[in-house]
Image (cartoon, rainbow, N blue to C red):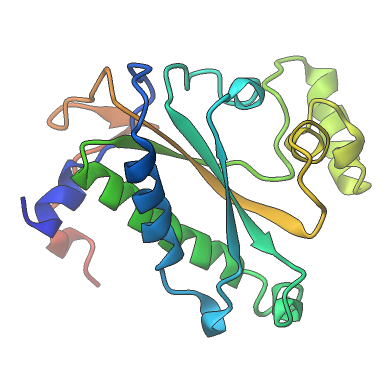
Length: 204
């Protein structure tokens, strides 16, 4: 399979078989992420690999059967880390994370390993439906007190996973072997077809 066909074939999978990824292939996936470009060659990303994803299921309950869950962090203790606080450059860590994630999921697919890129950050809370809880979350975020809430992902990262403060969450990906695959010809997500239009549709 050529690279473009591989890119087209890769899908976000949310139901996995539970089969484990061999350690050597897991290391290769991480290596693909490490070799992604980084702003000013900072190489600021760090990767936490979880095999026990119990804490993650509190935020992403649909990820049962995942082999490994990788959380990506920006190491803000590095010499060039001031750029990540500058309002004109603070987005770079997220660009770098996206580049690393794409390397990882495409390489994983080349090995027959499926993935789901997850939007997790310090502002994420456990899924709750009550109105007063949503209001409380907004207040905590506004007051910069969200990390004291046990239902907040930042709290889980610092207290359950024992991750130091200088590592800032920038993204995550679930890896494993897919059990259910969407039918590309008819599948929809958020009201839009997954299947892409011809390239001229997107070209300005």
